[in-house]
Amino acid sequence: MKLKPWFSTLIAFALFLACALGCSKSSPDGSKKESAERDSNAATQATTPPADIVGNYAIVGTNEDGSPYKGALEVIKHGDVYQFRWDAGKQYDGVGVPNGNVVAVAFSGGSNGKGCGVVSYQILPDGTLDGKWGYWGLDDSGTERAVRTSGPGLAGDYNITGKNPNGSNYKGTLSIAPEAGGYKFSWSNNTSGFGIRQGDMLSVGIGGSRCAFVAYEIKPDGILDGIWGGYGSDKTGTERATKK
Image (cartoon, rainbow, N blue to C red):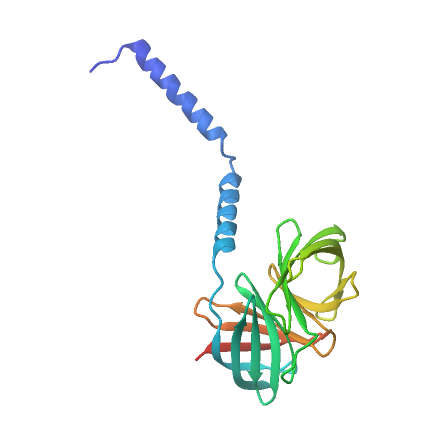
């Protein structure tokens, strides 16, 4: 079928206009596409259920001085949190809070970890800290969000809002300062802690020098790959737990 000249011109103009409008919706560097991909990835991470970490593990690791050790670990679920029980020549007991693919644990020697707590924060793109926290002996976890009010990078001052395990709300302030190999956390309710950063995750142990901490990355195969240390330590140990 032969088109008339004026009709062919009209079609060409329509195609040019459609192309111009379509091209204007995306920036040359593809930033809109990258933003959409980041949003999609964030949504996927937010909706991904936590891995089942309950069970018995064989562990191998290194102490803060580099010497090796091995032993056993049992992870027991208690409501929103997990009890971690080690036997590595000495017994240790702790509480763990999962947050995405990381579980942060505060622990102490012996079978009684009373007074030890842990916070697991995710560092959001705008610098806000989005956290979950728990204490040894409590089966429920709390939440906390810290919005920076001053300071460069992670160190600085924050306003916090949160929810206690019993559902009541609270608010206050938080200061974060570099210390030794990590960061010191000081809350306005006179609580203090020590934590380390791994990428966009922060793991903080609360309870003073008797309470150490470990931050495990939960691998796709179920292995727990951890870094641990004592309060204010400038050295860390490692631990790898493989489910039996």
